[in-house]
Image: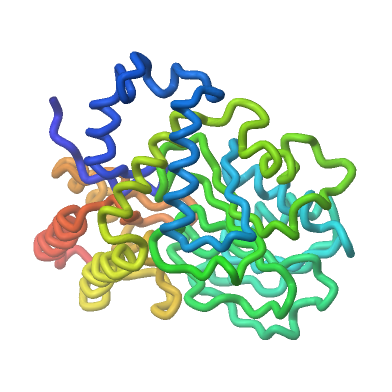
Length: 364
């Protein structure tokens, strides 16, 4: 069996080894059922226990208030780009968007098909390498909601403070940072996240929706894009992504065993700190993000030339550190260090960067 690599992929991403081993143990027969989870009916009592535990653990981990529904869906965060306006842009047909990256831009472009969209602030002028500042009076008082992306996977930025929106519901795409630090769910109208970065395999998307925002969808909303469909059926209107939800449940168990989200936040700050400390003191490597807006999950960095970038990625892969190539729109490298990335992986990366700098410092 091949030894495990350190996988710095932005998503689908690394999963905890303990979770993979548990899934392997239960692969042929889950809890004596004689079936793999992906073979069993989603209406069965056994599977009902899995999805109920997944929801219960997520509620506990995120301290989700009772007046919020937890919905398990398919279609990725990209489908939420349509579901959010179809369900929420229903009073004044207006919504305000903060543009901080490719996914924020795509969500805005999707919403423009359904109503009047206003871009409150944008950081596109500097390839989205910072979070733009704005004041609450830039937000229209009659907007149905304000949308932003909490952590920008491609560009390595994050909101360290919640946008000011008064009584207007805040909606956020939390795909790459959910469960990585403590967030006060009660401050949001909707939180949604694709699972394949910090929760589990691709296939399930989770939305945490305040109940008063459910049930007022536009008339044109397809049944499968209406939050009420999932809320009324406990996410069982049709067959949910059963195996992805099962793995998510195992990840939630693992997170609880690690001490919960507050403990993970502390660990994530330490892990990111090791990389940023090196980058800030390096004469060869450079971080690309404004220091105050740096992500704990996705760390982009560059070397002085494209040749050195390519050499770094190739040599890192040869030492068992894979998927470090940066997104094509930014270039360079990107280390995604989600909850499941072990401390040893981050330390190994920093040590490799030190060796690379010593060997190639004269080539800058």
